[in-house]
Image (cartoon, rainbow, N blue to C red; front, top):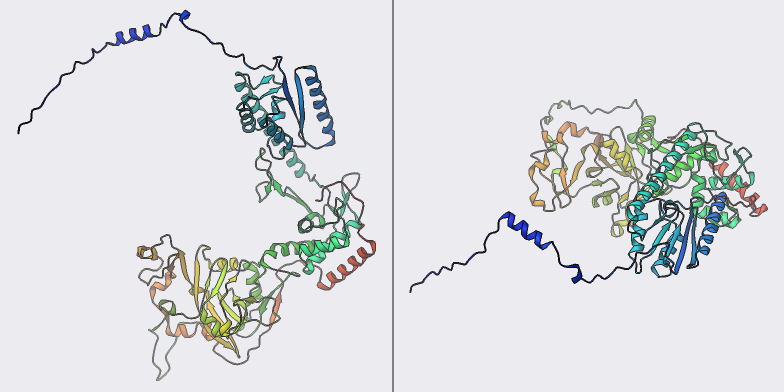
Amino acid sequence: MYYRRCFFILESETVLTAEEQKEKIRRRYQGINPDELEVIPALPQDSIYEDKIRRVAVYARVSTGDPRQTSSYELQRNHYLDVVNRNPSWILVDIYADEGISGTSLAHRDAFMKMMQDCADGKIDLIVTKSVSRFARNIIDCISYVRQLKAMVPPIGIYFETESIFTLDGRSDMQLAFMATTAQEESHNKSEIMNASIEMRFRRGIFLTPKLLGYDHDEDGNLVINEEEAKTVRLIFFMYLYGYTCQEIADQLTLLERKTKIGRTEWSPGSVLQQLQNERHCGDVLARKTWTPDYLTHKSKKNRQDRNQYRQTNHHEAIISRDDFLAVQMMIANAKYGAKGVLPSLQAITGGPLNGFVVIHPRWQFSLEDYIAASESASNKTVSYDRSDEYRAQPGELDLRSFQVARSEFFNTRGISMTITSSAILFSKPCYSKMNYPVRIELLIHPGKKVVVVRIAAQESKVSVEWSKGGGEQMCKAKSIHGSAFLPFIFKLCDWKSECRYKIEGVRRSIGEAPILVFDLNDATAFLPNPDENVESIQPNRMALCPGLPMLASRRFIGAFPAQWSDGYGKLFYRHAQVYELNYFKENGKWPMEEAQYETTEISPSSETEIQKNIAELMDQMSKNGGDNGPETNENNS
């Protein structure tokens, strides 16, 4: 079979030269005879001066709630009533006015938002206001709402009287954008000037002291004690020092009908906390506790040394002693850990094998320096233990100096261990059986040796923690110990990373008949976060801390041993036999142990007896006087 190829030659268009193309375009744009077109004229643009029935809204705003600003508002209101009345085609819908509200944000501008809603509901045709700055000092808000109103059907215009701008005029956009920018910058300048003025006042010790329960202002503006109100303040502080919660104090004040600064007799936990945290009650003034990062949003935030702060002690007469005030602040800071009652102290052991150990307080955030000082104050410097590696085998004894005792971490065993994270401690199951299944325990630490001991807590112990749910072998269920109060100092002591978890193998020893668990933090195995979910894909170089040693890994963590372990698989036999956790506790005899209180602070708050006495006296006086603690005022509770 034969196939024949057919070729078709098409006649192509003649290619025009550049000059011919230009001539063609010229002929096309000469157009046609105008008589052949019918022109349909556009409707005239809307004008503010057009004689047309309009439903008019007036928007007015004054920037502060000062009574002296009332005149400004009344002048604006009366002026625009006259403007509307002079124009017979205008019908006044309403005068929308915001008082004491900044124009840099739409927050709390209720009248403005109501006006916008009425526009959306078709009740308004035109908005009249004094100036762009009265409408909004934020350029984004100004342009956004102008465009939103223009997009409505029918479009709604705004007339800015001072600038003579009508937003439905096509030529108004550029002028409006310029004026809105100017208004925003003006607000910015005012904010900078105000901040500079406040800074100069503070540098000269001229502080703002708003009304506060317990104080009045004299004719010179100085704080003077209001004795009747001061009784309420003292009762609040003494009750909190004694261990009452803010809710319990609020309930008691409400029951006694004690008045707040604005004359209310109903108290809330928040209002109680405000009184407890105000430094003016101890005679000090702290200026600039908060600051405003953005002058447009006006949202304040806590000043964490973002701006200068100024403190003046003994600025005025105190209602509460400074030591009582500082003790309350420490109690408030530790309340999140469950701490209650008077200012605690650390318990340090002064004798026996636990000499120098400090009982860890689980509900109070003492510093690492506090634990070290408490340990050193109780340590018996005359007692020493030989930790030398040098040892000579006795005659007839096998010389084991070159032998090592392998670390239990290298074996797949479920022994005594605890795992520590930045927020909690969890013990392995054998820990519970070795301790005879107690429900509550105490944790002790020797910060110098970095050793932790677990002992059974006494029934009356105030520093115990619950480590199991239910006692006995059948009922015991492991429970993690939350340690937000004390784990930060342990991580700092051991130079651990907060993102890792650490596992420490331990041993059981006895002091007399009492079992204890001993953990050496120096031998912790670190578990680093695993970036790969597939454990099999972990590369050996991830174990750079200790190459060649067996790798522990899970889906979430990778085990990493201390670098010094790469020299061997354990400690030399005689070194191991003399380490602290074995040598200290091998005796079974009775050990003399005493616990000494170590005061970590230099402050001396009121004693428990004094607090009880003051509470009783104040409540007795208030019960006799009823709820009257001074005249009512219109000032805000501070």
